Amino acid sequence: MLSFLLLLTLAWSAPAPAQAASASAASSGLEPARLQALLQRFVDKLYLKAFRHLGDERDFDHGHVLYAPASRTPVAILYHTQELAQDEPAGSAFGYVDAGARNWIQWVDRDGIENADRYQRAEFPDSAFWRWFKEERVPILKSHHTIVDKMLDPARLGAETSDSQQLVFTRFECGAPPAPVPGNASIDIRLPTGERVCLSLSAT
Image (cartoon, rainbow, N blue to C red; front, side, top):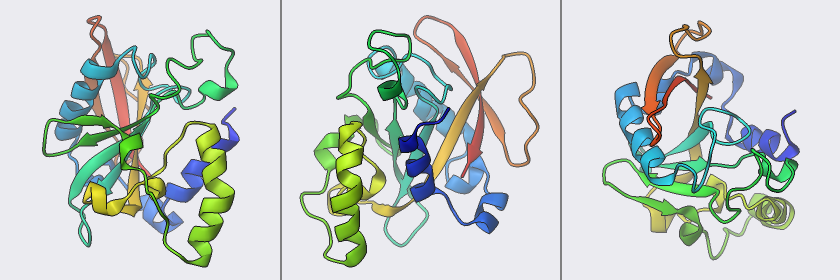
């Protein structure tokens, strides 16, 4: 069962129903081949350090594309790993690898992957929404070691952090076609062990 935190994160990042119906992986501004190359670099660097199960919603199955201000040019991807680790027993297959290694920024046009912690806002805008977000949501997110896009400083990132698009990559058995969903695409990733992982891409 999805945890409260996952449902909360999806609710913040999901587009309106009309947008969701027409969304595809390509609509993120990242073509499947480019996303495959980016995700492969991330896996090469952080497999077994930040996650263990690629394409599984309990661990690592999505990222949030962040865009340049006033454009749809992708700047970075915010990944969340160990997604439901707080619901799992310590030391179990889906428990934490490292609670401090849950949130990652991968730059799209330069070869860099960084812990998202260093890009958190020092201050939030002064409005009713942001006061509510800081007082009611940030403590919950921090208790789960989660950094969502709105917690990132757009000036430091050079990206808009209140408007992102979620990309989901769901594992399926290689050699068997994924469930046919309009707009979906497929990519292959190789784990450092040599294992091939087949993923179906979708956007929300």
